[in-house]
Length: 306
Image 1 (cartoon, rainbow, N blue to C red):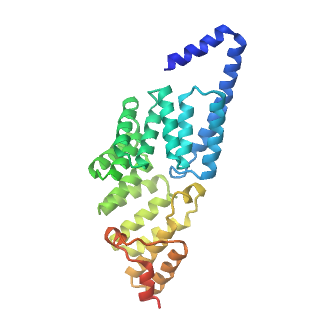
Image 2: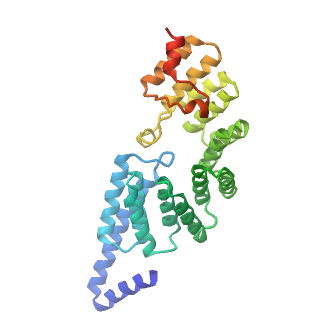
Image 3: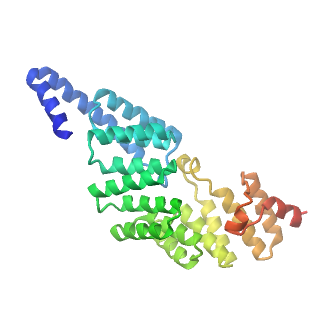
């Protein structure tokens, strides 16, 4: 496909030098807009992007494509913009177009896989991840995303193996440690999870999610005072809109602090933080009793905080 594109451009240049010049100028302008879009998409917070920034990136990449609609990477970036806007059908359409223009575009394969994964088409996602690996076998990011896929798919062993491989390739991959830690947390391997979160915090001392998740591990280990320290540290870290539009950890941190104080027998502080969690929008789900061993703060308030 690349040779075909080159031939078309070369043909225009031979027919008329001025047309070739205009075509080149259009491509140069398109590349500038592409770079603007790319710089926005690369400035995510925990791999998340606000709606405002996503729309800004989409505007730039739309302009690039209108100027020069022949670059695979442009459609990949437009697909990524739509992905952050949660317009998954449009994201898949653009990733597919990117692959039609360049079937070796490993990032397009990977990003389409991520989108399939988010629409619960796990088998299609796996196929695309494996295709991405054909063109980039040493990508920690692909293995990391495969770990997330297998985690959602309920294939825990494959998930951990994928995270292990991502970390082997990139020992400073914070996202891989975070997800492997969360997998260990869910499996009850709290000390292994704490080890992963400690590594993250050695790489980034202001990692909000790592503090929150390490606090959970300590809570389950009945280390309530240390858990409270971690939860309060997580609350003290203020991030940008990209984080808060996609993650909402604070209301859970307040509830976790309350439960930790309750574990210490400090009912007064527990009541304060249960109320704060509810004020911040905490909504309890009945299934959390079996999964996370926590109770409804509204019931706890009624029982202990009269």
